[in-house]
Image: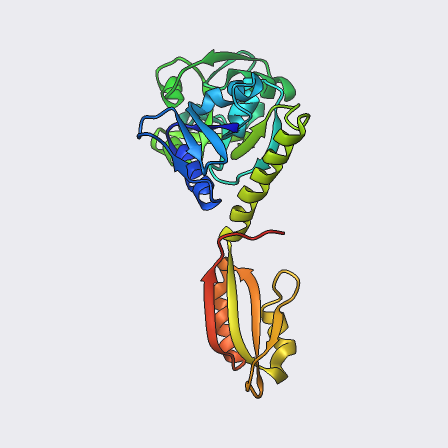
Amino acid sequence: MLRIALPNKGRLADEARELFTDAGLEIRAAGPRALTASLGGEFQALFVRAQDIPEFVADGAADAGVTGADLVRESGRALRELTDLTFGRCRLAVAATEESGLLALEDLRSGTRVATVFPRVTAEFFASVGRQVEIVPVSGAAEIAPHIGIADVIVDLVSTGSTLRVNGLREIATVLESSARLIAAPDAREDVARGRALDELVAALRSVLAARDKRYVMANVPRDRLDEVKRVIPGLNGPTIIDIMNGGKFVAVHAVVSAATIYRTIADLKALGAEGILVTRIERLMS
């Protein structure tokens, strides 16, 4: 049974649990504080801090893990990214106080002090852009550092930017984009059975993610409007057309469409004379 390291708290933990449950890998733990759990009887979950997951996976304590790309980069460990899980999107950004007058990296003088909880990534970034800075490692709340003289700028995670604005800071550069990733050790597929299990896990998670922004549409449409219907609901590989028993001039059309445009899709179908329109959510979508 493969061991999967999952975040033990926070937004990543909540979304990871939801994704695995939707993929049919329900978390069954002895209690809310349990450090391990069954994942649908197929895998064993290990609940640890998100920042420790790269180490757990790299050292072989877990076969795979879910954590942020930013934490993987900061760990410096050689790891294989199996798939982007798309949730937990954020960016690691350089930010300065509004009153500093700093608007871009070019405005930073040599020796600028940078407070961050990501010292490795921050040092690599400034080296790559040819800026000599002094890294000031902090354990949290980097936003306060410029206001109390600990540092001139910060490098911190940004999602909406509201926390920066509340604290009188503005972004001047992006270090990297991040989201939750499923990771494994570089040699994860050397064992055939383990490699097959990981491939099945990736396929299951991807099928749930692929379905989240799609809807399944069914409608009875006039046979003589089919060419126009195909433009309204092209589907993944074109709509499925089905003859209806005693349907007369109508045929049934089924297609997978984007959830973001479902309102317009329904309106366009009705304009073409469609009847019996039904829209449902999709649990999984295998390509």
